[in-house]
Image (cartoon, rainbow, N blue to C red; front, side):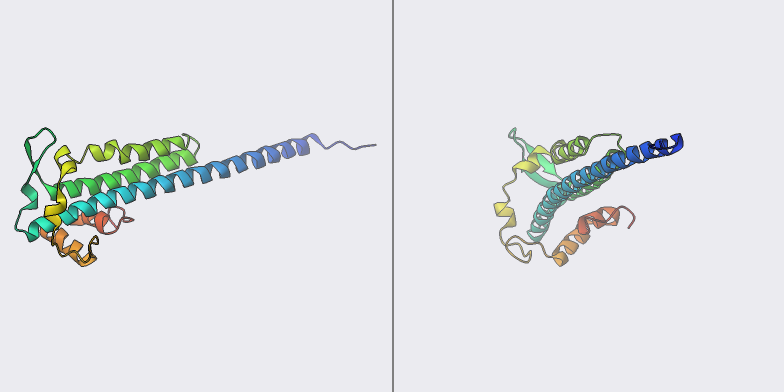
Amino acid sequence: MKRALPRSNAIISCLFAFYFYHSNDAVAQTDICRQAAANVDDQTHKTYDSQINFYLKIAGALQAKGVDPRSFPQANPAGGIDVLDIPELIQALALQKENARQSIFQAYQQCEAGFIPYQNILNVGSFFLTAGISQIVPPAATHMDVSNILAGTPFGGHDAIVPKARSQVLDSLGIGGDVRKVIENPVCIFGC
C-alpha cells in the first residue's frame, strides 16, 4: 500500500518547485539585465570620452595658438557664424555622460527587479548615444575643420592626449570639481 504524502508536505514540495523554477528565471533576468547595462554603459562611455577628448584637443590647440577657446568663431551649416564656448561644451558633455550612467543604472535596477524589460536599458543607451549628444553639441561644432587647428599641437603623439597635457588644459580652462573628476576618471561618481 502506497502511502500518500501528507497535505502539508505536498504543498511544501509545490512551493519549492515553484521557487526553484522562478528563481532560475530571476537569475536569467538578472544576467540579461546586467549584460545589457554593461554593454550600453561601455558604449556610452567610449562615445562621450571620445567627444570630450576631441574637444580638449581643440581647446588646447586653440590656446597654444593664442585663440580663446571660450569664444571660438565657427561657420554653421546655414553659412552663418556661431561663437562656440568649447570649455562649456566639454562640461556639458561630461555632465551628460554622468546623466547617462545614472539613467542606465536606474534602468538596470528596474530591469533586475522585473519592473521593465531589458529593452528599456537599450533604449536609454540609444537615447544618450544619439539625441543626448545632439542636444548638447551645437551644429557648428559638428562641422569643424580641425586640420588647421590641430596642426603642430604638442599633445604627446599624433593622436594621443597625455594625462599631463589634459590636466594643463583643464586647469587653464578652469574646469574643476565633479565635472573634472568625470573627465579624468570615467568611473568616478559625483562626490568621489
